[in-house]
Length: 463
Image 1: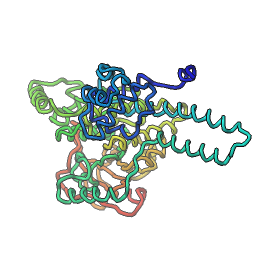
Image 2: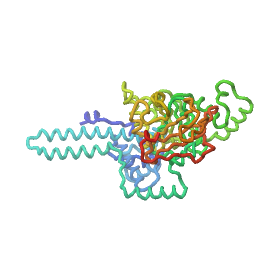
Image 3: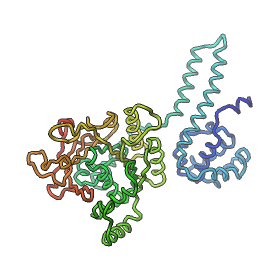
Image 4: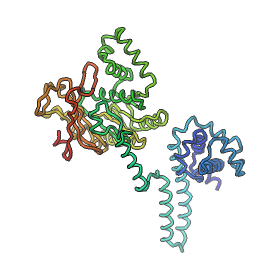
């Protein structure tokens, strides 16, 4: 039996890490207390410590190394739990509780392994008996497999009636102007028409190269930063220095060329210093890791949410990402990345904006060069996973001088944001101003009411 115990799967260090995380951060206990139980812990003293933490939690009492030690003493379990110093040792095993949910899932998997090994031996013993009731054995086996499989699935179900009150209250707050449906965009008309960028949604911002995808995304990040909204910007194409120079250029009306070729003068320096003082404590985080995989991004996003409380994540751009779990088939890899981005949005309950390239089919079409959903590059999964698909379109880029509507107004220095898919609203076209010298998008000063709402027709019919 001892030999068998030694060979059973176990993860003692992870058990200690989970307990240590609960002892140094009591707020993390609620994240995993309903999915773990005493038998998940292989080490007997770890089971006793967890049991004490669970009792304290159920009684709404404070949880730390001192209160747990006191609870062990009160219940007469101090020696079984490794002595009075063991909770202190556990608290020194980890620096933070950032990975407690991930570690807990691993513990459950190891526990499931042990349970299957033990129960399988019992099932085999029963199956060898000549007088065995096979149907009863099948029922017992199915019951065990069902019960053990529930541990591997995160419980997330709630009663429909429990959500009605939350939905009503949110609607009332929107009506009273206390909250907005989502985070604001850089363009007022776009925010008003779309409701902004909502939590849990994947927003695709797609365009051909040179249209200004990165510029618009940086303007979005800068706008939210100034409103004290913690924002994370991942750029796989440009360095962090380049990104910062572009934001400084657009927000201070300093030509971008001065950062690349001409250099800045004394007046520019004063503007930058003043801007630096304003944004010094603003919550914009930039990561310029190249060859970033979706798996790495998921880990990074979890940490940024835990440490900085980010409320939106922007990725520039989707096609430069990779997936370590998919090889050779690029379409499958893009599908995996797209699905991973949606998972980040849903799990962290934040909007995720992913920039995306369009295929060359846009250029090969005659007439209007407005993008279509079919132009999304490399995978139909992008359209499928996205809650909102937006296109950036500047006819001036193609040498056009007028918009192709019935008024034929000048399109010089203008762009159009097209919402071609929107799970939570209608399709929209909104025009805006574009100043190439600063790569700056802003509200169009004239014709402020130009927003075209298109309901009940396909994107291809609309655009």
